[in-house]
Image 1 (spheres, rainbow, N blue to C red):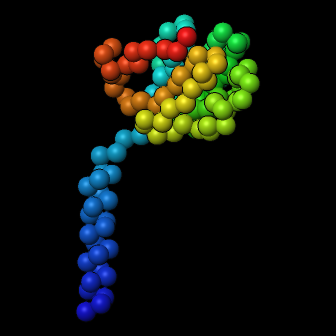
Image 2 (image 1 turned 30 degrees about the vertical axis):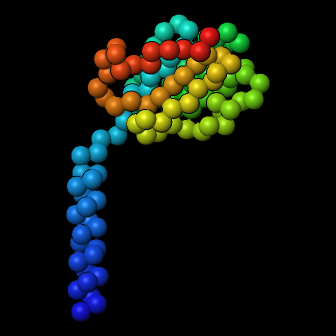
Length: 120
């Protein structure tokens, strides 16, 4: 009897996982917002992106479908310490250099759903 309960539990977990994650598609885009505007890059293309800010250039790296700040001239380096962004909805920013980045899905949202304020 215990074996049947265990097998049913494992089956239910497998079915629930398939239902929840079956339509999962990995995030596709990195959106970077700075004083120069909004830039969008594909996560599948490795690159180094210099972004100009009021304190100097920050460098963002896209590698292995992840993005992170490699360098920024800010004093505390919290943007660098925040690590890699890999999932849709992940975000980080360098407030002193006024740069914000986030991972978004394939479909670019309408202008009303984009960031509507920046900290100056």
